[in-house]
Image (cartoon, rainbow, N blue to C red; front, side, top):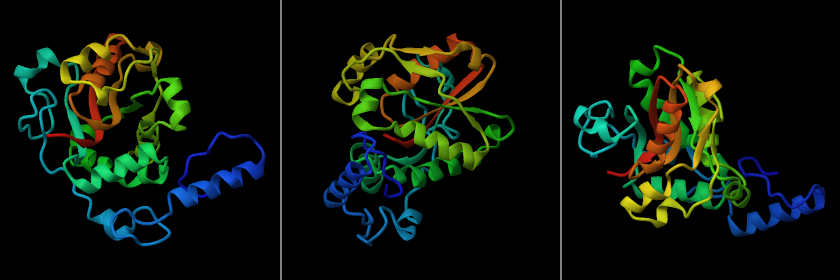
Length: 245
């Protein structure tokens, strides 16, 4: 299968796999999302132009926070210690890359986003002084089957190599609910409650970087962080490809 594309589960026969590849090539020709250059979904030049989010924002109130740490006054409503984001979601190119990655199954686009995330982590010695555990926000098995992959898991694989951290899939989504993107802020908080479980034995005493694609209201990440802290995690921060402001 062409590098960067997730396998299409249509059977073990090579003939059917080739047919699937041919359909993908017709529907999604391989060209740079930025400049249209052939044979790549994001050329080196356009990748180098992706904006790094230079400032930090409190994950609760979205006001300025130098290191992405939650303000002391916001911590009562938040389980996360803070959130680091690679890029601003307001940038059209960033939104296009994330959308193409998720909904057109172009998995190679996870790498340039993971590189931005790794750059953001390296800016803060606080994260390099200890071994943090990378944990992807999970998809429900039905959503995983529909999409064929979990973009948060792809980020974790690249980040583990780029940062030298370990990754573990210690969270499970045990209930299928409406997608968060279809709901308002208050409905998101209710929709996400009690749908995650954690393997406590693997997280007790750990410092965890919880990985996902976009931080919007924070309802999903905060619920994941609550479950992880209840399971014995020492500290939980979010690490995302992009953040809305």
